[in-house]
Image (cartoon, rainbow, N blue to C red; front, side, top):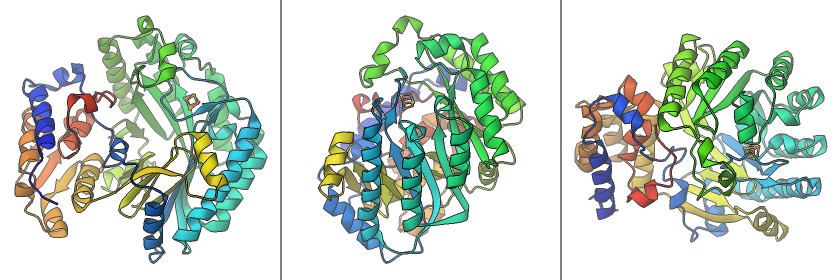
Length: 478
Ligand code: SF4
């Protein structure tokens, strides 16, 4: 494709530039409502096209058949939840009808067979993640069916990472023991905030003692790593309340912590309309909460990994971070090398070779496709060479905080400074703000930039970012 920037890129670069022209120090940056993608993929999912269908996905799967040595990562989406959390932006289905889950799991197994018939090979499964929705909505029978189907198709490895998102309200000692028996070695607990006022406002009441007991059980069962998801910016959240939450979290000492910023977008996410705007903390409070949490976590020995993630120094994620070996996929940061990602279930996104393929978002449409024996691809994208190049650069920024220009010149046969002349120009305001340095042979994100501007620095290399309207779809960067 032509390397010259399109008018769309120019417009987006101008936007980024104009928004940053007045920046002189990072505290100002924190106050500004800038939006950009989280870059769990590039191009981002909103660039996928419906012209990409099941036949295209099959073609890419078959092309990978000849490369069985490429290890696999599998994501399984379980969309069911028994109650609605008002802040939710996930693809989920609220139900108390368990028959839906039974049928869905039968379809997951069928989808796995459809995929594996094309992908073939004796693949090592290095990474498995069950997300949702609420994976622990599933009962023992369906969890067993799902895990034995995965084991039938793929070889689990002793060094693999097999994780499941756990809603503390849905597990007891027996279920935790079952998860361990089935081969899961990591859990991620949705904690959000221990403040009862906040829990009530988001319709997710779960006592601290409940989380502590699930954590204790996980440790006694030998789970290798535990993660807590926390959210700042939630309704009725206060600095004093979240201080208590952070102190409790530090006392519990999970291996990893994800501290997400709540993005209130009621026009996009219907469930968020149940949150009263009067309960929302102002920007200054949210920023104070974030700064406090960040300072306390680091004072307690947690290492900042990137974006929203922290880990204890002995955790593999922290080690990978120190050694420049981090990777990033739809689940966030990972220690596993680039794998093909097979995603099963409604709305899930596979990454196979040079394509992304997303399944039907509606569970009903997903079920219909599988019932007819066809892959449930709704949309996707075949990446161009330029997409692959930019994806590699954005991942290098997000994971290593550094882009070695010469490596990209050799691998992609380009003159880096010439190919990315516009992008380097767009970086200038961020350089002036002390977020990034453009050295002759490298682009290096500064320590401040790693905390405050990873998305924006990446966005400078995003060919698709076009106008304010499209950027408004993304959550707040800071
Ligand atoms: S936040 Fe999680 S548990 Fe709550 S409704 Fe959304 S998907 Fe379900």
